[in-house]
Length: 439
View 1 (cartoon, rainbow, N blue to C red):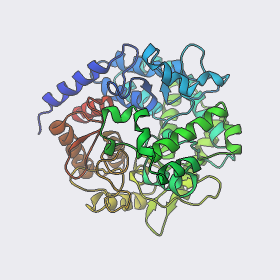
View 2: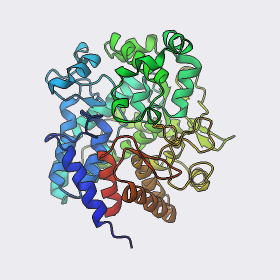
View 3: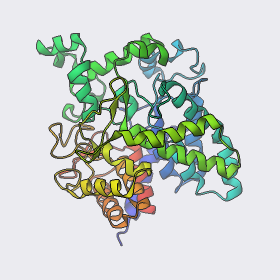
View 4: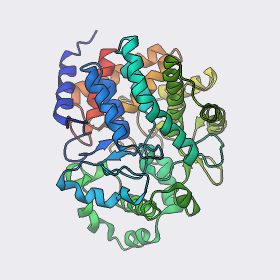
């Protein structure tokens, strides 16, 4: 058995360096704010070191919750240096935004219920009930918001209005939609005149990370344009949907939502507090509607366009996340495991690549178009275990830890070589390495 003592010590040091007191920033310089699903993954690792600190990490997310129930993907640092970030989002334009902190105006994958349960496993039953009681109202409000505002036709699948909400920002399905249908005319014009590289100075990410590891400049400009469109509508879903740029039933997000729904039910059961019939009916609809994202011809799951209901048949690592959702048949799970086993798809030397190796979008270095991410590996490992694929889960755990053990706690990794990419000292990599090594 591999000794993970040094790995855990290194990862623990990363979390301590990134601790801001009330929350943990994802990485120095590049990510100074608090991010929703980052804090969830961070708490899952912190529970092995200090369960009180893990609880504080998750409670701090609720300070940014909007009155309508939304949990924003970012709670802004109040440091003077980041006044520009706060002004770009202007969350105060929406009357439901909190008055004492600045936030973004969009959400992120619903990992909070999972994190609450994982932290609860470290507590005695009486302590767990107290912990669940603290978190249940905010969780219920968030899930109700998702169904009220992001499932407007009550079909069961929630929609996303911006790629940043998916967490897997520039994966092939989102970039296919952007380039084929949604690229703003002014960005196309700048690109045609070869002027987009001149605007690179406005991007903070490429000050700290090589440009080849981030969004292409045209994509970055287009997504900023999409964010400004949301701001003009004060982040009000009903107004945005009248002239929406993006409206996609995202595969990864809905996979995580199904799992989050089950964890929310478990929390309510532990407290003997039944969820409202309306919420449980919405949850049940999601589990049924999810089957519509399966394509029998390619044997994969895909996201779907909200308006046309056409599948966006561009494969990404999201096609494996129904394993984490846990509501698919054993036969479908077996099909997904075959994808993991193929070195030409999702099984290179350091799996899981964020786009299959044979995809025309595959770029081993570029953000969510090729690199391996520890948070996705963690979710797939969890799903593999629950479907009984323990050998596959063990192999994926070992390859994931080997990346971190050899190359450090980077944001993401080259799936062919293991080379570290993105931001250094990345918190969720450190936290999830601790969790996997402690299992």
